[in-house]
Structure formats: C-alpha cells, structure tokens
Length: 118
Image 1: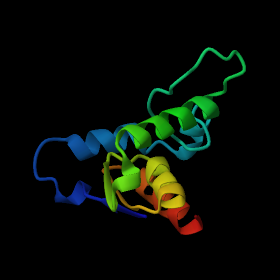
Image 2 (image 1 turned 180 degrees about the horizontal axis):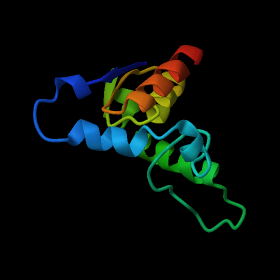
Image 3 (image 1 turned 180 degrees about the vertical axis):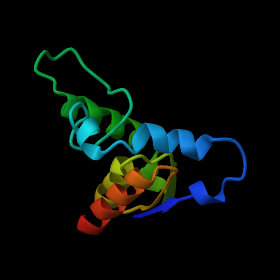
Image 4 (image 1 turned 90 degrees about the vertical axis):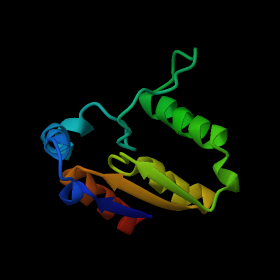
C-alpha cells in the first residue's frame, strides 16, 4: 500500500489548508469516537442491538469492496484515503495494489506508519 500527499501540488484555493485544519488536530481526538480502522464516514448498521461501531464499519467496508468487485481488480486508487483503513484492508485481504491519496499531513504520516506495520 502506498499513501501520498498531494497538498504541495495544489495551486488554487485553500483546499489543502482546509483539510489540514480539519484533520491535522491529532489522532487522539479522532480515536475518541472512531473505530480501530479510523474510518471517518458513516457505518452500515443492522438490527442487531449488540452491533458495535467496529462491526458496522467492517460491514460497510466489505459492502463497498463487494459492490466495486475489487476481487477482479489489480489496483485501487483511494482518493481522500484518510488514515488508510480501506487501502490496508485491500492489501490485507484482496491482494490488490492500493494507492491512497490525502491532503492531510497527519493522516499521511499515520497511514504510512500503518502500512509499514501491516
């Protein structure tokens, strides 16, 4: 899995600055309310009252991978990859080359460390 920072390549607006302001506040803040995968988007819940955030995020990732039919892909580009959870899952289970792109320096650092540790 590769994760790259493209913020220095932007020549217009404040997009990179806005992303960095929002996400570069420290992993500790997001770890308070995200699951272990650090997935920052809505989860896919079911009717089980014992369903956890981790279960619901896992279900959502599995659903997206299934719908996208990544089992037939050689590579996946994850734009706005966040902390790299989807790319890590691809590399771990689907044997697909994954490239994550982020504007956040903090997310980049964390995703690269997670990739090295995987």
